[in-house]
Length: 95
Image 1 (cartoon, rainbow, N blue to C red):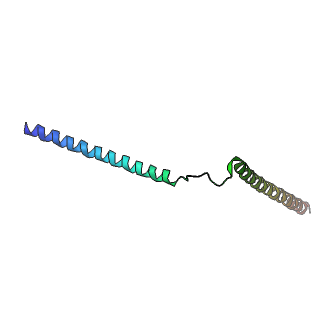
Image 2 (tube, rainbow, N blue to C red):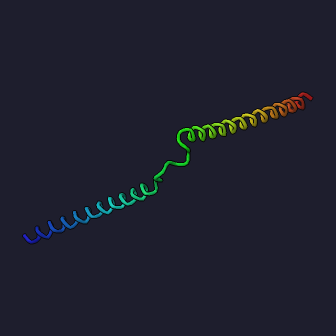
Image 3 (cartoon, helix red, strand yellow):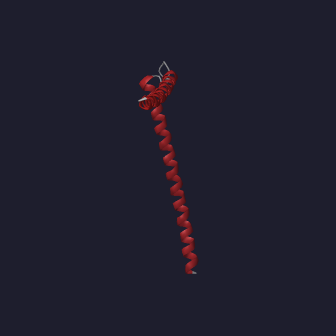
């Protein structure tokens, strides 16, 4: 009978240990979430409201468009140079 009681106590101790681990993990999650919430600014970001957000997104769009246009110009210049090289190679083959 004492052996059964000892086994039950051991199982209960193991269960309590596992519960303590779960509670500690929950505590760590709660602490991290509190840190994240604390890091969120209390005031609005400096976008000056919706018009500011629209203005900044417009600037970003213009930058992306300029970048894409520059890449297109580069590709066009490379194609022209490749065309000249191909004509020269074709001319040397005919000679």
